[in-house]
Amino acid sequence: MPTQLDGKTYFSAQETADAASISKPTLLRWIKTKRVKEAAKRDRNGWRLFAEPEVQAIVKTANVAK
Image 1 (cartoon, helix red, strand yellow):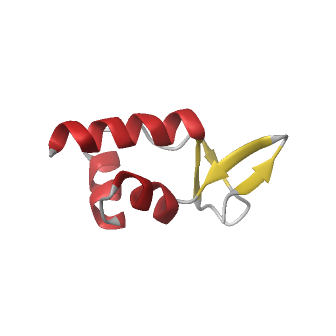
Image 2: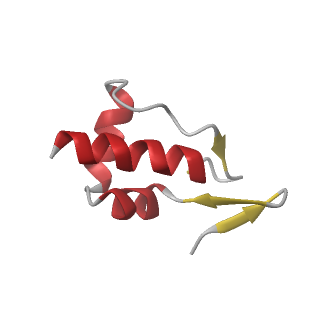
């Protein structure tokens, strides 16, 4: 379920991976290897939160990779 912060919608790493039709480990590997940018925001527990434009960029990267 997306999270609302400061009037913006953010998605978890799992939600972002699901939107891109990739696994969460693949998303985390892409972040580590700089294939995609790190999430700009984290929640109070340190979990990554991806804004809609970040999710769209990851989906685009995933579509190119297929």
